[in-house]
Amino acid sequence: MLRFLLRRLVGAAIVLNVVSFLTFALLDLAPGDTADTLVGEYASAAQLATVRRELGLDAPLVLRYLRFTSAAILHGDLGCSLISGRQVSKLIVERFGNTVTLALAAMSLALAVGTLTGIAAAARPGGHLDLAVMSVTTLGLSLPTFWVALLLIMAFSLRLGWLPVVGAGGPAHLVLPAVCLAFPTTAVVARLMRASLLDVKSADYVCTAHAKGLTRHRVWRDHILRNGLIPVITLLGLHLGRLLGGTFIIETIFGWPGLGRLVVQAILDRDFPVVLGAVLLMAIIYQMLNFVVDVAHVGLDPRVGRGAL
Amino acid sequence: MSSIGAERTASTPVVSPVRDEGRTTHPGQGVFALCCWSLIVRPHLLVGAGLVGLMVLMALLAPVLAPSPPDLIQPDLRLQSPTLSHPFGTDPLGRDLFSRVLYGARIALQMSALAALLAALPGTELGLLAGYRQGWLEQILSRLMDAWLALPGMLLAIVLVARMGPSLTATAVALGIVGIPTYYRLVRNGTLSARHALYVEAARSIGASEVRILLRHILPNLASPIIVLTTLRLGMVLLAGGSLSFIGLGAQPPQPEWGALLAAGRDYMDTAWWLALFPGLAITAAVMGFNLLGDGLRDALAPDVQSFRRRPQPPGGH
Image 1 (cartoon, rainbow over the protein chains, first blue to last red):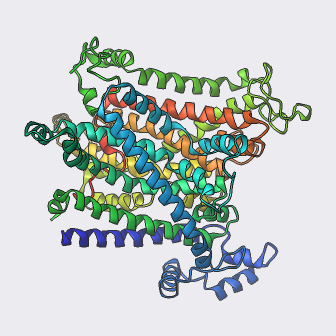
Image 2 (image 1 turned 60 degrees about the vertical axis):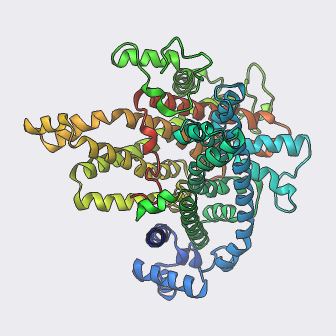
């Protein structure tokens, strides 16, 4: 168990280093670096070279990467925005909480609604409810979230006037973005929950549990649900990535002041230090969450940890 | 297991719960019979093929079907609601939305085809190479692909678009690059298991070259999972490309890309509902077409392809 965790931790650390270096390299090589933006369009090549030297931009890539990471780790310094001149770390801290709130709300919603509909569908496979759930989720997987967002805004904000159109503020502002962000994940969770329950339902140990006279309720609670949930937990880990990706779209549509919107705006402004800082943070969070999911997986299914030894 | 007649009885749900439906006993022999059988039994495939076919027709016949050129600005026809002459209405510049959606099918197909090609070609090639040669080459390639998959797809696509600057081509290229490891894994795993198959031994023993074995013997045997994966990816790319265009990182304004059309329609939502409705319907239909077609093909051709999609190993088990 301990060895398994250690190995996963080391693996995650290596991946994190590779990912951050590649991200740095990609964005750093982008045409129009900090110096270009600072000296403006009409500067001569000599001026440009001077500025580059002063900023240390003429050093080799690896050296600059090491400089960047050491500043980031030692001082929490991610450089400054090219547009507003503010510190990237400050910009990120301001936005971070909003994205976490949105992601947590969406995740809980997807988990609650998804597992419940999955259970309901699996209780009577082939029944009307099951067919309805399967059809709706098939459709749900093909619906673009940004379009769903538009339709929901049209219905609930413009026509009915129940919810605010965009922005952040009270809990009412959270409803539509969270529902839209949760949308595809809910469909996947429901389908997987259903398939997994149906798999477990026909397992030998469930048959045994029924045979030894346990009540239906106890068989479901102790045997079917507990085992049926394992793949869903694993899937949630993988879907955290999709959720992070979704925040770019959803936050932009709803004007939600989170990291996703920060990145999209920064890309449109060609403000690379901001993109780099925010994307790195997202990659780190994704790796950490994956690690947590793996640990949770071991907790739920002891075979995994032992098998890895 | 069910035969055709029993397919719709109460005991067998239309959408079978467990994934063994592809292994039911097939009446008749051969690919053709299999295809016919699948079409009858699974409306999946038929509906999917229909939707995709419709999209291809729209793209091909756009110049014939469109009432007016997609970029024709007619200031006196601003924001008209749908009528017979303008079935989808007109936009704030008086452009005919129906024509724009038709031409949007071209853009969508081009973008997703380019992205699929950019993922499939390098992924397949490297996968064949790694699976056949193995050794240090495979080790390096596989570790590289692992790191590739360590970033969520959308995040990687965003980084790549940031690098290249927002445009439709950048979106297609980014979504293509994001897809390479998926193909790599599928093909590498397939090649690994095919390496020692009898037909490969036979080919080797009559002196076929490595290239010939890979291209003429192993690759054709991997064709069906590759086709299934590509179909499913086309839908995914369409959705992701539309999303990126919608937030301004993909297609740029005059281009009638569906996501961009929706973004443009946003500001007129409360008065011109048609601008926010029809392009969305088009995206949904196209994505659903590819998804259904891919699912149907998977059931018919390669029942176990699911296990190759993204991160096949269970966590911890290497």
